[in-house]
Image (tube, helix red, strand yellow):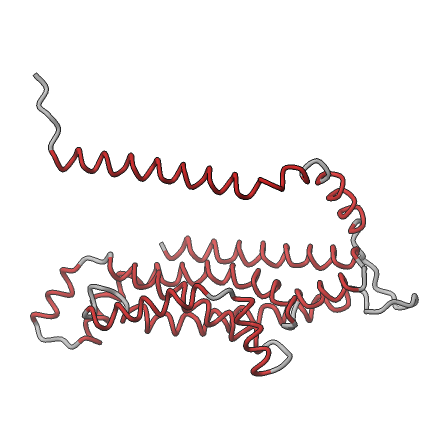
Length: 272
């Protein structure tokens, strides 16, 4: 005779079933709400997309300034814009990593008391909740034109995301080394340096490289609110109805993201 399942196991099974039903219900609700009016427009979508893409190709690969045009050919400015985009992304990611390291260690439940880590986790959640484009607009008003608003926006948003991930990485470490150093009388900084950091350093660098990939894409998007870089010139060409130049800079952005992604992939693989 098969024994009845343990009460705890039955409760967990019911909980998993309930969560599954809730997820399905939320997906159905989201689909119905989103598609209520959009299904009618889907019939024209292929034609409109084909028309838009047709205006973008072939990409503008010209270099000459012989013909009159509102802006220089995209290839003439691509190198400088790639450099600015990389500068925004690298500095923003570095600033975000430094802030996230501090708040990540302080926000880990196993490293600090409740009155320390709980407010920090709330603060990190609030930082993540602010769209990066809104942060860029805020800093644009505060510091003016250029690359600085984008760098500050990306840095602040990176702190919110990386701080959460760094704190979770610290919470998953083996507590044995921490407890041994605690019994030996080590202070908090010593325990973090020698008990926690060796266990999480590879994961922290890997997460930071992943965030760098995201920040390159986001720095391009921030051009739509006036931040210097590839995105700004994509928007300039779009406003001039020069879609072939838009296509050129979109391809440049894609190549930049692909190159950085491959570099970070190989670095992350060596960190494992």
